[in-house]
Length: 34
Image (cartoon, rainbow, N blue to C red; front, side):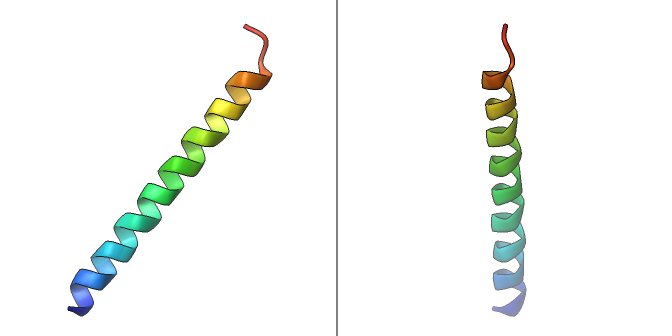
């Protein structure tokens, strides 16, 4: 149980960081004039 919860937490943290990074890249791309 504990290892499963730890793995789930790590995966959710990784997904959150990926989403934050992609959102930041989208915002930077929107600010840049093409």
